[in-house]
Length: 64
Image (cartoon, rainbow, N blue to C red):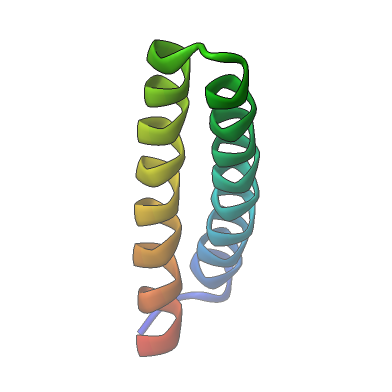
């Protein structure tokens, strides 16, 4: 059982990191469009990492 404070932290973490993931993935698409494949690869990996953490936080919220 989570405290109210922990539930709020998980909710904020999920929201914040999913938003950051969208920004990184959009940046990756823009970098790919202009031909910067290394930058796109970096941003895509970063976005996917953020999304994985956001998904884990969301799963913990659902379990609570």
